[in-house]
Figure 1: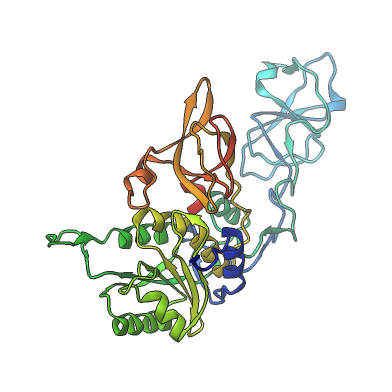
Figure 2: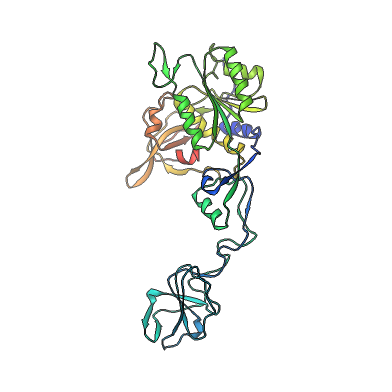
Length: 403
């Protein structure tokens, strides 16, 4: 007998995002602590950047119409950071990169194109009005929106905010996430393993992923395989966090309680995803808090977090990032049997025959996390599709997926 229909990856993500609450609280942080945070409000430019016309090079400011065959006297020297006086007619002024352009000058000649003598300077190249001048407001004009609300602050955004004088940045509060791992067999690293026990891999994978995503982990528990323990932990986690992520316990086994509790106590809207690895994946809302139930296998946890949880986290933080596009590259592997599930292959880029291609780890078992350490990212084999070596596919780097 066929089981419940699988939900496509695209439909699942769309349904999850439609139910994602957005963090509304704003915090003010110093600019030097803003890296990775999400802007809570648009930042408007208070004054032109740069504030005045300035020189793009070390050289000499002059009026192009004053040039003749004779040397042009140098009447002034204006280092960056000084206010120049107007340029005397028929003369040049010595400037440096960033120096403000004196009134009356309309060009700057690079010092490499100038011969200097006691009489002045002789120009060795053609001069046109406006050359080597960075105009006021060329980067940002007063009144422009420098950065939109929802922008993730990278080093370049930090520099841009500094350029408009921002010292304190309004950012959204970090997303509070609770992690619940399920399984009587789980043991923390550093402890001896007993019969049938394994180390709790998923806790640490998720802690690292959430740290990279800029989230705050407010709870991190390992649950025993009982219905009452699971119910109590889920309720407490939902009350203390903006998002709950579980690993394991979402399949149909007698000891898999996460999905059952979510059906009984919450609104379960998703189960069984057409993704490989990671078919048993659940999404529900419990007490107003989204709960994402990931599979238990370590590689499946990594893949489903990157593919499903990261879009949810971005939406909860109100981010307005560009879409994750990946790269279109030739495959250095083949897939002979089409699947009803979209497969995310642990893969990496390599040079093959003078061009870059994507090679796959030989063993794609969902229990093998070592494959992800070998890999640079995920290659996508669409559902209902076979793949021949040399065919083009989409490759997503881990850095792009988690940023």
